[in-house]
Structures are given as C-alpha cells and as structure tokens.
Image 1: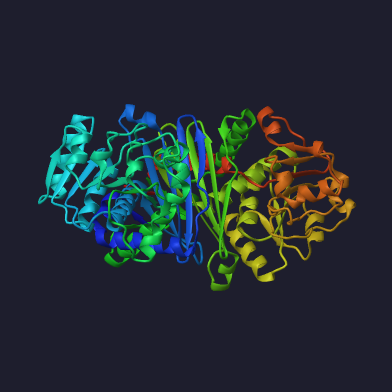
Image 2: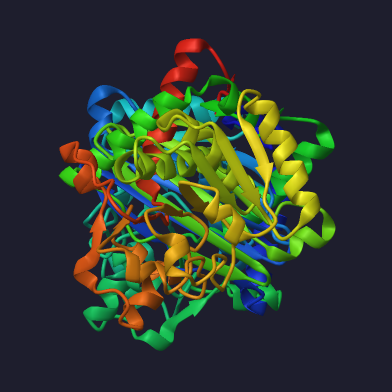
Length: 319
Length: 319
C-alpha cells in the first residue's frame, strides 16, 4: 500500500493535470459510469464521522472525514481526513492519501473548472472571500484557467488575511495580491469572485448593480443553513450551475433561493453538461455552486496514485 | 499514523491480553457506552464494500472490507480489509491496521470467550470444522481458555486439512492434532465443537444423541442463507448465546430455527450478560453463535495500537 502525505501530494501534482482529472470526473458523471452511494454520517459526542465511498470502473475509494469544531480551542485541526483507494477489479487497497490535501486540491480544481466554463476568458482579477485552505487552492487553480494578473482577498480577520496573502504571494510571486477593506470593494475590483467561508449569512452586499456581469463561484456553503450569496444575485442570472444536483438540497446558497422563489428548479443545471459537450456559458452574470462529491476524490486520488508510482514518490507500507 | 501489518500484529499480541480486550468489549456492550451505526454496504460489479464504524469513549474506528469471490480464480484473496483507528476526543487518525489479521484475532478471541463462559472447564478436546483462517485462530485461542490436550480437525478438502494441521502443529507443538474422517467422528471425539465454514447446510449430523452434553461454537454463518448446525441441536438446548442480538437476523443458524419454530426469541441471550456479571452457564449441551461486530474491532485495535506504541513496533507514517 502506498502512503501519500500532504507534502508528497503537493510535490507531485501538476495543477493542469488535476484539472484534466476533474474534467474526466465530470465526463464519468455525465455518462453515469460510476456508483456513489449516499455518504454515511455517524456521530459521537462532539465528533461527526463522514464515510464517502465511490466506485468507478478502474478504482474505488472511501474518504473518511472526522469533524470536531472544538479542536480549534486546543490548537488542533477541526477536520481530519484520509482516503483509501482500491482496485475496482479485485478490491485490493492500493493507497492511503492525506484527505485534507486531496480535498483542498480537488475543490480548487472543481472551482477552476467552473471558471473555465462559465467565467469570461479575459477575467484577470480574482477575488477571494475567506482565507482558509479552500480559498487558497481556489486562487492557485484560478491562475491555470484564466490570465490572472491580480488577486484581491478579503477576510473579517486581519491576521488571517495578512498571513494568507503572504503565503499566497510566496506561491505566486508574479501576481499582484491585495487585501481589500470590504467585500463590496472586493466584488467591485474583481471579475471572478470566489466565496469560501463557513458563513450562515451572505458575505456580499445585496446590490444588483455591484454584481452585474461578474462571475461568482460558491465553495463554502455545504449545509442548508449556510449561505454566502445575497438575494440580488438571483435577479441577475438566468441559471445556476452546480457540480452535483445534490447541491440544491445540501447548500443554503441554492436551497434558500429555491424556497424563497427567487430561483426555480429548472434553472439549476449540472455543469457536467457543459464539460462533457465542451460548451461554454460565459455571458452576463454567472454563478457556479460546488458542494463536492466523492467521485472527485476518487478520480484525483487515482491520478495522484498513478503519478506517485511513476515518479517513485510516497512510502510503500507492506500491509 | 502508525501502520501495523499482519506480521507486526501477530508478533506483538498476547492472546490472553486480546481475550481481556474482548471481555472489556462485552462490558462496554453491556453498559451501552458506545455508538455502533448499522454497517454500510456498497456494491459495484463483483465487489461488495462494507464500512463498519464504531465509537467508544476513548477511540473510534472504521473497518473497511472489500469482498470479491472471483479473486480466488486469479490467486488473490477474496477479502481485503483495513481498519483506521481514531482518537474519540479529536477525531485524529492514529493507526492503520491490517483488517484480515485484526478480524481473525478478534474472532478467535470472541469464540474463546464463548467457550470460557458456556463450555465445561474440563473440556480437553477441541473439534474444528473448516480449515480457514477463522478455524485456525479458534484453535489457538481455545488453548488459552481451556486445558486443551487434543485438537480434532475436519474439512471436506484433504489438502486443506493436512496443510491446516501442519501449520497448527507448528504453532502448538505440544498438542495432539488429528485429522478426522467425518464431522460425525469429530463431534464424537470432541468436547467443544467449533464450526467455521461458509456452508449453507448443516455440517454436523442431525443426531440428538451425538450432540448431547457437547459445547458448540458457531463462527461461519454470517448470512441468513448460511447454516452450520442441524435441527437436532435445538432439541438439546434451552437457550442460545449470541455475541450480538443482530445474530438472530444475520445468521441462518439462528434465523432458520426461529422461523421453523425450533427456537423462540426469548431463548436467544446475549453473552455479555454472562461476561459482565462473571456468571457461567456450562451445564448440559450449550451453543454460542458469533457474527461479530465493529465494537470488537475497535477494542482490539485499541489494544494493539497501545501495545505497539509501547513496544515500538510498526511503521510511523507522517500523513
């Protein structure tokens, strides 16, 4: 069994190859050649354990994620994750991957795939609201799909904001990175706006004129009570693109507008329809909402596993 | 994260300590201080994937088992398994253990715990029907709980039978080990009879006199269509001891006699009632049926993890 930790995963990946893997995942999704059972939730005291299996024709995998919000108080991560990748023919376990690294990478690539298909090709200014690991990888992958010259960042926490910018500038030395004073300023100064917070209320002003002709990418909200985008967004768009139809139930960014009649179900479209047909929908104001799915994890884990074997990276453990 | 493979697990365990861990698991079960969600089944082509989480106050774990019966044709194991052990306070993953080794060990210890509580203390002759890994560990653990002088073994496959006996004799050089010509001879020559086959029909003759005053341990049947014990057994016993109440649904060895009115539901008792109260029920003919549960896996994984850390065994992988 091959063990791939965070550093090894980061050292071996090529972002453009991960983007290819995500496009492959959207094609598999479009063709329906996979089995992704509903994820299993289990609870004990402060811990939530999520088990997320998914099968494709060559590989299957299970991501195990445990969440304990109280860990922050003792200086530990609130989320731990691992992914076990198996051979779909025999069931043999092939690899164990750091789940946090895998999730951050695949989420970055899913957001950027959204940008590629629904944001204008000329978009040079990316705005990132939220300075966690997801915001970070959104910025990195955005630079692969668009000719990014400037990244604008906003967070309510000044310390997190400056740390994020310093870290991002190290990775992207040639790009101008600016701290914004408000989300209003950020939207105004950006062509593509990514929200990657855990907010329960919109993090963007409810102003239709501010939002007009911008491209919005929603990453943060993954529960029905979490919401990053304001009502005004839904007066500017004719459709919402999602990574999986489950987004309409799982994320408050779709579920609440649907409930409040600001959005109709037939306006919610799965972006695999664009990807599989190499079609683009980049005019006017646009919105892509991602909640993620285990299919992305398996396909990116497959890519990382194959590349690690080829480049002899990782630790072989005889299990 | 500590990686423990089969050899490392086998090298560090003490069978009497594993038996203590299983008694601890039965106590936890009796007190109800755990959360064991229904296991998740997923299917794809020839593969069945089982995800089995269980939480206890200090540790939780998830056993992932994949089954593909067609693997035998290509010389690979039909079952692969891994166990991930986590800290129950933070959720942090602590160890990855070989699931096959863990399952064999805990199943051996569960069977022997049954023997300790319901088989006569003077039992010197153990009969094992079925020469797979489960039969093997049943024999090893039986020797810890009873003054075993002789082990009788039967299998329909002569080659498997002689291989099993050679391998077992290496592990137990001071015990007489005999191949039996039939299951009838085996029962006749044994005080405790363990069935560890995947049979769908009784592997023991339907003869009440043959069964009288013997102690039977059922390990093999884990599906409603699998059955190892004959109807005659149920005319000889007043109760059945099980490791978990699920046994009545999961195993044909309980489900079929219940359905055929040879057994009543109130005759099915959970053996944790004996273990927790240090009571014994060793008179007459007796029967313990085990189907296993994730609680055993977690408690034995906890024991192995703690001991491995103490004795510096295993491979530390920075994940």
